[in-house]
Length: 150
Image (tube, rainbow, N blue to C red; front, side, top):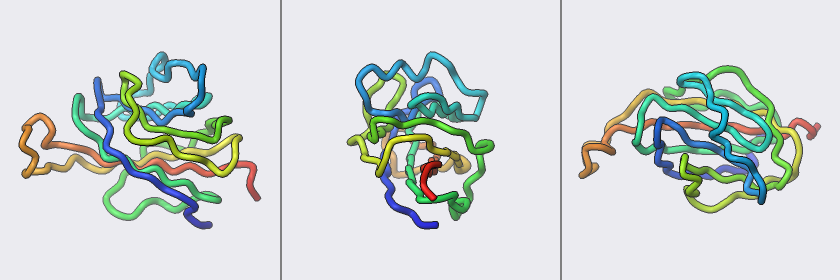
């Protein structure tokens, strides 16, 4: 088992939500079906995440593994069991509810079915943040691994 890639971005969580989506033309709106409170929903080309915080920033790390990964180190809490999602375009991207991207799209090694697990940290505070509205934040780790690889 090894980490084959990762990327990190800060995402604005409007109405408690953000998503990891397949960056492909015609990808439907990921926010038409919402997850359970403080959970995530994985479905065709989309992983939608609900946070405890609304209209705050989330610091999100996406890890791409070659097999089932271990739980991330630190104070992360699992947000449920692993789910399956299909990423056929080989490009994934973090977005907010207005579909604004948080950074560049990232390439996957291959298309197909992936497993996805999510973890979140307890809320943290950044006292040096000048805007009080953005002082609290959460960290998320999204782990994905291809189910068709040996």
